Image (tube, rainbow, N blue to C red):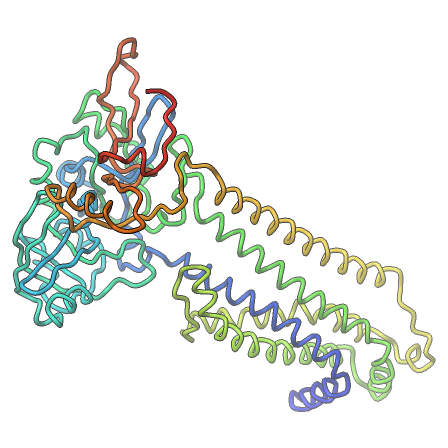
Length: 539
């Protein structure tokens, strides 16, 4: 029976070649767009979730109740993780981490290079999955002079991961220098992790570097906790609300924990509560993919029903010979399944061809690896598209009565005409919404790109000078200014935007002593105002 229906489907395709080609390529283009968006959405939903204990890993966030409102950041005092582990029975493990001091330079006898990494303690490797190729993961960060590096960094410094293990290297940042031993080499982090550190240094040494700056009113680290099974997270957040205030009476900070797997997608906060984030883009593009799929299916429906008059004799003869409505329905659904399958194959081939361009646009490394999960998604898209595209034509064509067909007295009802026109109107309405949405986004992007940020962006170049020590900085800038084409040069300790280093310890005449105002502070060099073209309001 199936073989017979497949034969009939192929004959129908060959008989109506133009309609077949239009349907095929229309569906293929729609499915290509859907698959590309699906790959992007799937990648977004999987970021920061590839850890065995992900259901129990939480990041400690802090709400700062300042004069301008509540500011939420994922930064805590340096002793936060250790104190939570010691005082809260719900906490099975706690780890401190910090990238507060960026641009650490590593050097051996022959090579000197800079990497981006984290200061962590041993518990970090017991909470998160880090795949070591050399060294013992359970002891990799037990010493204050321990260093774990990625395979890439190990290869650049020593030629291979095996050669790197046990070797000593010197590292420097600002005026801090130390000699450490490589106790572990781990696989490079994949694209589904937000942080991809080149190295891990001892968190204990980081706190030692802070010295007197390591106190409960200085926020310079992140804290991660592994909660015990069946912990009531809401009750736990209520319990720790006054945790920092209990250590620092004047503090205006309220901590809470957020599922680590949600921190990437839900990173926007309002009044101290989660208010969305990148999840909004995931929902938006998922809706766009669904609309595009519906538009492609409506094209299929309209073209199929539009040529229904040319298939009336076929239907009439089959019904006269005893074909049931269910049999005809099955035949038309087989045609839909077959055509959609061909369109899906073309869409997969087009996706492979467009992957490099799409990855460049999205800054990702997406790939069509046929894993069971992806195959199930593709099969689901195929079946859903086949059903959406084929259900109405199958019902419409299989309902005709043989007597009406043979006498050519078939007339479309007002309801059928209204349904077809309604589909066309719906299709154009969705298209118009997408066009308007793209236009608005384009204008927003143009606004962002042309917005005056308060400094002159033209011919401004940023150079990572993390390998230059404080004592060498003035000489380095002086040499830069002598370079041909360089009008001026200056330095600053960290980017001007974002929360990097702040203080609430400023006071002035008439200030309300109960009001806490957070000031972002940046260490800068001479000539910065002239170099960046700041316009002074006063002074």
